[in-house]
Length: 436
Image 1 (cartoon, rainbow, N blue to C red):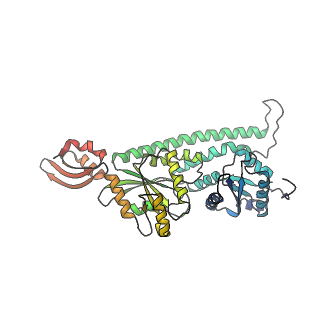
Image 2: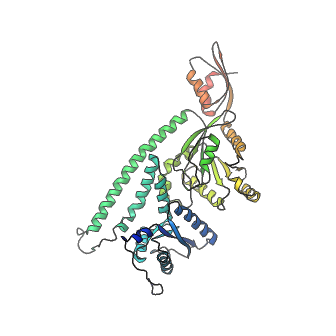
Image 3: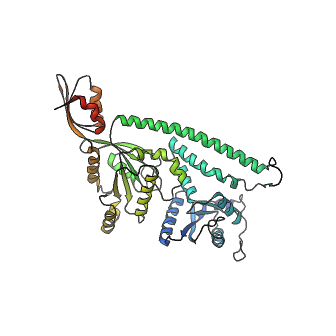
């Protein structure tokens, strides 16, 4: 550090106070050229909420304006000294950046800031996912992402060992040897997790095929994290999926059967929420979970109307849908939490999202409109037919009750006369028994 800023004392990693400091943080947002202060502050506010989800005490925050990234610390040396001094003055052991740090930048921060640990938004999100993963698939997906994040950072874990750079190729020191062993262990573990995850994904594919045997339209609920997706699923289906006011409350897709007023049925799936600057490795790792959105016939895009960042959140969701290959699905936009905003906000949002439904889980506003739209989706390829099914076709009759809307059913001498609204997936199956 330069002489202009007093040097804080190096931190002893075994000091109880230093251990306590490891749960205190300074947050750092970045404002690049072309970005407004409001945009940078919005992202910093979101980082604040993410970090709070980990139970970390936040003792300060600031926004660093940069023209170009410093390869050593991400920010310039002067700003690095300022951040380091602030962290030491506030008795913090963590500096958390709202941007990605390279492994080298993290090592440099620990070395040049006299013991401060520097992490980034990606690491925070991964840690939240680690704490929230419950099912086998979610645990494996998070473990894979964590291992992939950890592998290039192993050198930082061994920075306390002396490195001997002289000698021939065979003369490696203990630190390098141990690091190479650890890298091999992590690569082996990554391979095993991928095998285990492939088995779980195959099981999910089997479950999906079983659901598709009952040819119901499928709808996936997508949206920014904490927009109210799980609450909407519960409201429509009467289920009790976990719905709390926190980021990433739901990591696993949950599918429920939705009975519409007409008697038609659909399969409704809640999916993991999206977030700005979602780590790319998490997008990759969670593609199996997000396959429910890829495979769905329709999407319900839930937008939190009460959030001042609702449009950026909506854009993030649509961008991730494009990345996972679900950008071409028909979308119903639901402007949720309409009971929390005034008429001006509602009007502005409706102008941005023509055809969107104003919705409130609390008051029930928008439920009839959403059900009507879902009825329309379910009936797009429906056909009303009259069938005369032979008595030996009870299996087909059961399929009709499960996957069509049976309007009437009457037993006759030569079979069962059925009047039903049949979806496109079943029409070829029933065609031989259609009567005038």
